[in-house]
Image (cartoon, rainbow over all chains, first blue to last red):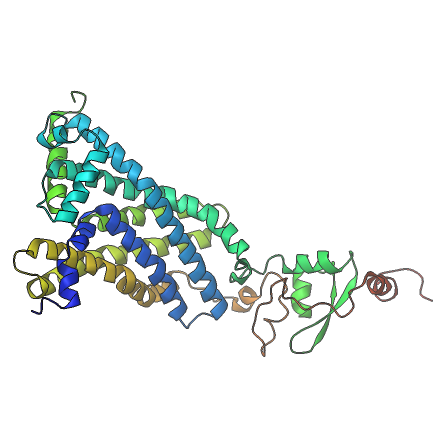
Amino acid sequence: MNITSPLVKLVNSPSMAHIAQTTSLAVSVETGLKAIGRPMFTMMDKKTDLKSRQFSAVKEFIYQSLCLAFYLSIIPLFKMGGFKIAKKIFGNQKGFQKFDTFKDFVKYVKLVKEKDLPRRYNLVRGSVELTSIIGSVMALTMVAPYLAHKITNPIMKAIGMENLQPGHKKGEVQNMKSEYSPPGAVTLYRTTSGRIVRIKSNMTNNELNFTA
Amino acid sequence: MSIIPQKLVSALEKTCKYLGHKNDPVIAVAVIASFKGILRPLFTLQNKHQSKEQTHYAALRDFLTELIAIPSYIILSHLTKGAFAGKLAVPGNERNARKVLSFLGICGTAFFVIPTLCNLALGPIMDKYFKPKSSEPAKESVPKCLDFVSRDERMPVVLTPRQMPKPLVNDNVKNVWNYYHLERPNGMKV
């Protein structure tokens, strides 16, 4: 084994060990990778047309990024709350007598990471990790998708991607009618193949399809 | 705390100590995936803005994605640990190296394995359960609204309202002229 190899360094690095053993960091990295990986695979799928792929890829990227942002903003609150509850339950235990507040514990964790000290106070760590897992489940399955779903569509609209939505033909004819024609009027349109079609603004959808 | 039963307190203590000592990223990731697999389809099914078939389709897709994800995370993180821990861990640092390898396995699974498996497996499964009704395929393929250009075989592109070609005759005078002289439904013919 070559100790200087970058892979060996990565596997044995204390920072990576810290990320791997801290739920919130591990889940954040995983969600970030999903935000990159899923759109990438969507774009690689050649079975569907380019515009549909672009639409799904951008939507997935925005959705995952928003989920990550919400997650990162919510999870410290869960950790803090978890520490407080655990201190109430296990207050007489050794670990919790050492740390008065959650900030003290965070300082201790940083110190352990920097100086590569042995891990101690497993009960305190574990209670924070348990609330992190519960918080991750709540944030990533209930809160973040709801909020992200509310925000994704306005963002798609703002960046002009909404019109690429597959099957989003509803409204095209109505827009044309309102933009160009008074009721009952006939307007001539040219298709890209050069054909000229006559469209009456009060035509039904079936008549329009037949005309086209 | 006297409100909480002693049994529950001792179970919590055991769980916390286990997580503090042996926390593995696969635990959190698998728990999140299993809850996503249950809750996301339920939320999708409650969406009233889409048709019943669309919600069923989306819910089944969400469920199957997580169903693929959970075993993938568990198996691949264990495989990565088992296969590379002996080769890459520096003596004395095996424990941390195993955690890091498990984490790298999860990253690889989330980034590469799950999207690939979903691409391969979900298509045929979804086609099997959501086949278009073969009785009148032509009727179903007709779009609800007019789409001039996509119906033209030489140019299968959907134009958005913004990109829609401007009419050749688009001023009101011409339209009014058309209305009164060409399309008038009844009245005296001169």
